[in-house]
View 1 (cartoon, chains in turn brown, purple):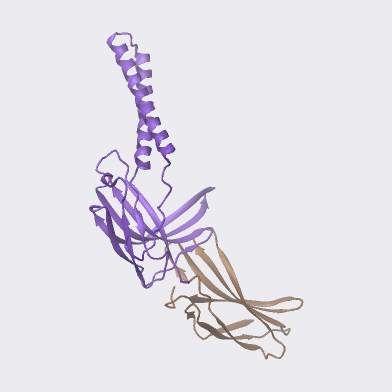
View 2 (tube, chains in turn blue, brown):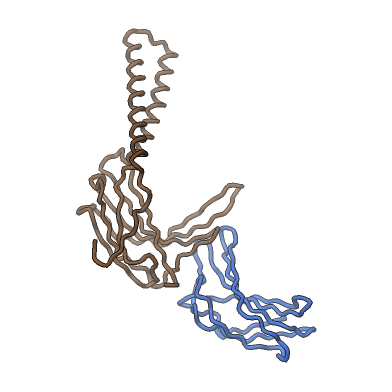
Length: 115
Length: 206
């Protein structure tokens, strides 16, 4: 299981996203991958794109890691009448043999910190 | 033109002289054919040689040619629409900023007796419903910039992008578009209304 405690659930483009990732797994993970994904929801086919951010080797990390990276400049989180654009922060823990656990955390990236 | 403002190219491709000539030629041809059919019909009626079947045939033919004539005349007037020429300082604008917009109608301005200029923010989504492609659109902001007579053939306005506006966005299935809309009416009822949409970009990267 992975949990992520973000310092702020909403951030402005270009500002630092910071938080604490914690995990409790039977097998020790070797890497933590952090990536941001935006996707559309509502009417229309889903459009999405991802921004790989970090790939951290975890040897010696005692089940938790502070993460920090700048928020992308765009697209901004958006909530409209026909569709919305949502950002999701994905954490993936893996070993050489494959993925151990994954979690998704919604986050708002917009200048006024609201979609 | 105001100093310091760069010219934006004209909005859409104007018809070439050949296209305008061919539309005018087509309109004239349909006009001649409709007059000929009407004359033949009247001639047969006067000489009492018109049976019911022939009268019906002539009427149907005349209606068809008149419909074609109306269609080509409508296209001809639409092709001859006056086109606004725009000036604005940049193409990409940030939310919360404003920019001066100037327009003029250098050609055929007398074909317009009412003009409205507005800034619109439109949301659009493409999807397939019942195996048919659908584009659904919704105007979320309609901000009037000018409303009235075209008057002096030119005008100007300050275009303000709202502070909390969303930036332009486009993917395969979704778009958020900002555009200036020029809508004009002609004094003549048979002249189609003018509509031009000039996209502008509201960006976070300027």
